[in-house]
Length: 582
Image (tube, rainbow, N blue to C red):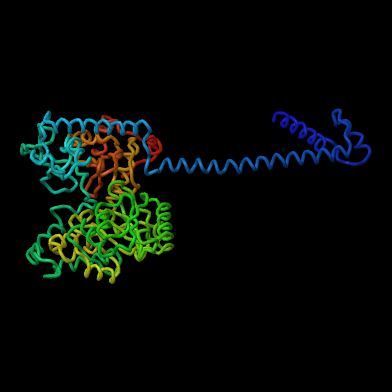
């Protein structure tokens, strides 16, 4: 390489002196003067021509080499830029190896000690405080004897004080908790009669409509005089209240579909209606992290169930192709009568938003039915609160079945299914939820109707739109701040469900207790609600939260994160350059 550089320099120097300094005329006098400038080189026309060709070939080779190197470097540079972009905006940052190893080791220790204590209880060395069979039935086959039961007695029981807390107030931006104490590691509680008001990040009260004052509460109270509390009979036997009929019409208008049907329980809306949509000749393709109600409904339907990796479009397409090619293996490869893909708008444990736009592209390609559960996204996502379809600016006609609940954004209870008139008519005639349950309570239906009317702007106040904007502002502010503090935060940037990863199951109790001491109510989640190595603290942002509440929340999370050493992120520097604006 060094010789090439010397050669090129020498060639350029000769070229410069021969063609720039030397006279260019062909007459004899000027040719004679050429020798005065050739510095000892015997120059003639043939030499100049040959040398010029050599220099040009060397220059061309050098340019081609540089071009090839640039072509090789450009993909590498693009790859590095994409990796930096991915590192900065990755929604599922992984913890380092040592944290993962320590989590597995923690579970190993917990499991070993759990079985040791089970052994001690079995032989009477330790008093058994859990519910168990009588001694004379010890030789019978046990009704339940599984790892979950052992886990509940030995692990969950020790941290039961951070779960199932009794509340004694309206679960708005703040909520009052009934204080309780224990002397036997949460087997029994006593209540001193005092209360503690905490900032509420445990409720799915996204738009803040869970309140005991205002238009919703007033309308719900007033309708009791007109329509009562309950019909005390199923819809088939007596009919449904006028309030529910009005609500169903409003839901269809809000979603942008032809018709809708409402039920008194959100969980049953999924579990009881999939049975009349799918059968043993059908195929359900379900997201890995779909809700338990969807899993139960899919199993009850008798359909073949296949799972695709969470929010992984490539894996979904792979499952679709294999299912179409090989058919129903239970019936010797006979094609499935119908295929339904079931997804959620926002996944409540991961905080992720489904990739609806990409799934709709697959739907148009493979012609399957699409079931969208918008329990957490309706009201909370989209410019006007109309959910994931509006968030992605998709056409509501591309989704066959809309499902949602009223327990989150609308501050009430129940659920709905919306779609075409033919779909809703079929559900009314065949759903067990229509046959064997009573209709919605009129005050609950009126609460939802009033809240939804506010979101749609029908009340003329613009209050609903203000709440949607407040929720979006609060969500973006808290998410960015948590990332700047060094926490691994799961989920999509616009999702109001914010999981903070702590990984170690033993830190769930620590977080719950320390946050309660600081008058913050959070949800700590571990196995079996999540994978065994994915323990987390989950907070839900609400439009009812003020900036002062959020700043107090972040300050205390920062303190507890330092105490528990759960700031596992290596990418906080990427976010510190961005200003968190409320």
